[in-house]
Amino acid sequence: MASPDPDFGNAINEFRKGGWIVSLLGALGILARILLAKNKPTLIEGVKKITAGGITGVLVYFALHGTNIDPLYKGVIYSTAGAFAPELFGLLLDKLQKFAEKFTA
Image (cartoon, rainbow, N blue to C red; front, side):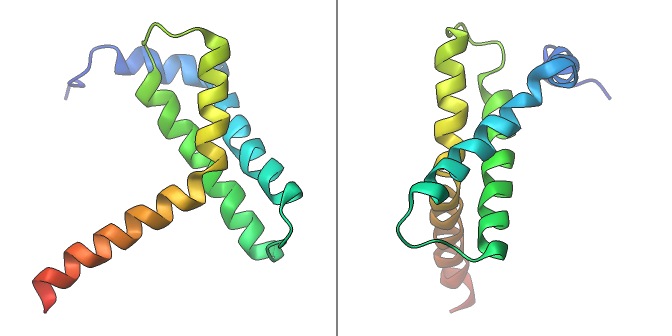
């Protein structure tokens, strides 16, 4: 089955060659927030947040792949998205729970 986006295969190949570094940028973004936070999370919470930052970096990589944006700005977007990943995922989960409650009530 062919991909609906003909450039998706190219994006995967570029990710394998070096795009994976964006997961590190996302993880480093949240790690910086953890290091600067007054209330330090537990080890497990920290690992979860860093993992969420890495996953978000990858998702943003594929969202921005092929766009005509300066690589420096892309790097800033990747790390910023990773830094705010826990809040983004929390907001998304809250919205999904409220949506699901409409149908179960």
